[in-house]
Structure formats: structure tokens, C-alpha cells
Image (spheres, helix red, strand yellow):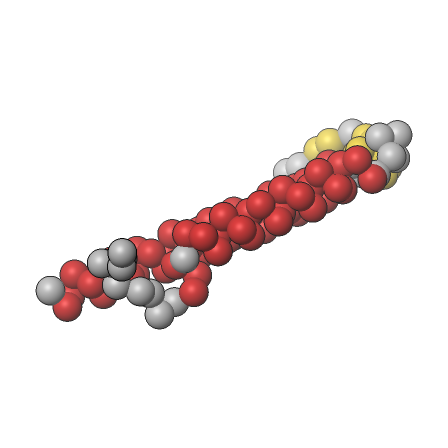
Length: 95
């Protein structure tokens, strides 16, 4: 049985590729979580000025890769949505 939907010329519009990329990010996140020592911290010096102020604090290193991978995941999802939106607009113009 053949699929009646038109194939996209843009590879970022592929739902399968997006899911594979997000699954890869999840695997990397799990590996980073269990690899980094829970006691590892970075000391961040406080800042007090007229506009912004915060105290000295210890930032757990374990959360940093999760933050970065989450931002990459957001970028992947937004690129996929944009490509699918543009693809649907192109299909509407052709009809």
C-alpha cells in the first residue's frame, strides 16, 4: 500500500527524524545524569547592583547537560513545526 501524502523536500519536516533526534537527546540526557557525580557543584559568585541581585550559590553540575539538551530539543521541535507549517502553506498554494 502506498502513502497518498506528498513527500516533503525538507528533511526537517519529517516526524520520524524529529522523534529519532529527540530519542537520541533523551539517551544522552540519561547517560549524562548517571555519569556525573551528584555532589559536583560549581560555585557562582553573587552579584548586587542597581538592576540585578543574587547571592552566592552552588549550582549542581548534574543539571547543566540536561538544560543544554533540553534547549536542543526545543530547537528540534520548533524547526520541525516551522518546516511542517511551511510545507502545508506550500500545499495550500498549489491547490
